[in-house]
Each structure stands twice: as structure tokens, then as C-alpha cells.
Amino acid sequence: MVDEKAFEKKKDLNGVMCSKHKYKPAKAFCAVCGKPFCEADLAKIGNEYVCYDCLRAMIKKHGREPTVEFKSLTPILIIGAFVFILMAIYFVFLHIDYAPKLMEDLKSPEARIYMRDVIIALLFFIEAILILLTNKTAFALGIFLSLWMLFGFLAAPSAVELPEITTEYIILRVILPVLALITLLIGKRNLYK
Image (spheres, rainbow, N blue to C red):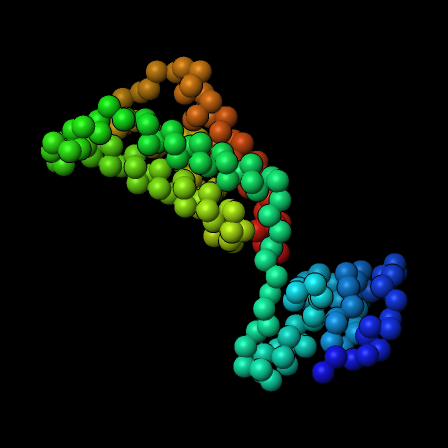
């Protein structure tokens, strides 16, 4: 049951401290009990904030959690998703000349390299989708894929084969992974709201 006094309290939180953590400034008043809480003690339900005690009571009463609002998709996360799509396209076309071999003989080394590249491209596409859905898994997978790409463990079919250093190589193997890391680190708070 919503406390009517909670809505009568003014929204100005200057100097108001959290009810549980007296040393932390309050972010909002709970829409149910009306007490002030810091960000760590609040869940956003729709357009309102609810403290975890009231949320637990609501779950106990109704048997499920109320519908929670989607996390915000910021421009930095959209840029990050675009970067991962570019890296996916890179892997699809990295060994495109091996694609005909795939149709001829699935066990040939060229076919295996191309299948590996397509699987890697799928991982990058999945990462882009996870970012756009603001999924928490996106951060860990994105960091892993970016570092893996940056350190070059994926490009060379064998450990002794070193790729030729070209402008394309620098852009696709260094600049894009670094850009992806930056967008993930900046956008992390939007993935973990």
C-alpha cells in the first residue's frame, strides 16, 4: 500500500541522507514508504524508486517482482554496438576467398579457417545485440572479445604466421578494439543500472 505522505514530501534532496546509510546522500524517496535512500538501496520500478524492503514486501504479497523499466541505451553504447558489428563484418570477409573451399571440402584447412572466422563474427554480432539490449553480460563478453582482438590471438591461423602490418590491420586490429573497450568502460554504468 502506497503511503500518501510519501508523495506529499518535497522532491528536493539537498542535504537529505539515506535512511540506512547515514553517511550517504539520498538519491530519491521510496515511492511506497516515503523514506529517503541512496542509490544502493533503491530499485527503479517504472518511473519511481522503491527501497528493497518495500520491493521484497511487494514480491511476497504478489508472488513476483513488478515490471522493471529497461536500462537506458545511450549514444556511447550504440557506438560500441556499431564497432562490434564492424569487427564482425571484418571476420566474415577476412578469408572470404576460402568460402568456395568450404563448399568443396569441409575438412580442408581453408574451410576450417573460414568456419572459425564466421563463428567469431557471430560472437561479435551477439555482443552488439547484447549491448543494444543493455544486457549485463555484454560488458564481460565485450571486454574479452576486445582484448582478444587487440592482442591478435584470432587473426593468424598459426602462431608462427605473422600478419603484414597495414593501415587496415591497424584500424581493424588496434583502433576498433580500443574504441570498443572505451565505449564499454564509459557505458558500463548503463549496463549495470
